[in-house]
Each structure stands twice: as structure tokens, then as C-alpha cells.
Length: 124
Image 1 (cartoon, rainbow, N blue to C red):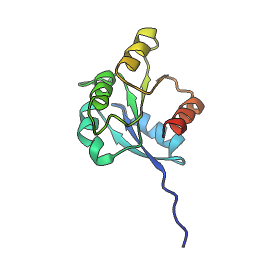
Image 2: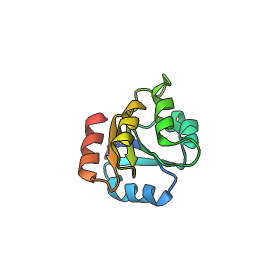
Image 3: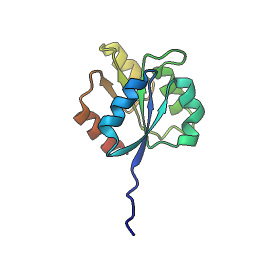
């Protein structure tokens, strides 16, 4: 009987579902992917999903990615989960705000998937 190797689980938080499909196309061989459409949904479901890392969009309605990251990093049960913020905001201010919120990595869109994959493999 062959044992199936367990893949690390990523939670993708993005209000645009097509971005999740894109991540799935690129990362599903290495990772198991789960989806949350908002910061609120992420905060409600993170303890159930129990991800090994989170890919977090910044610009979302309701709680944005910066605040979602800050809440996760200040909650003892989720503070150890690596969070990579992915943003269309291409400013130094956005990058600084991301790291101030506690993220473990910051990537600008369009993504360099080799760099993203390397970061995920290092953090998990």
C-alpha cells in the first residue's frame, strides 16, 4: 500500500476568487490550498482550517489584509502561522505597513512565483 505524502496546507485569503484559482493552478502540486474570501472569514475559520501558512491579500472590503495580519499575529493560537502579504500596492509605505502588521513576507503583484515558493518552503 502506498502512503500519500502529506502536503503543507495554505490558506489563501483574497476577495477575488480567480486569484485563488490562479494560486491553485501554480501551487497545488506542492500544497493543499484552502480559500477564504475576506479577512472576516479568515479570522472565523483559521482555527478550523489550521493552515501551515497564509497568503493574504491587502485590499479587501471589510477588514483589510494589514488588520487581518495584525489580529492573527496578536492572537496566541495563530501567532505562529507564517503570513505572506500579497499586494497590488507598490509603495514603500505599503511594504512598511505590512511588516509593522507582523507579516513574515511581502510580495507585490504581479508575483514572482519562484520567490514566493522559496519563501513558503523556508517558512513552513
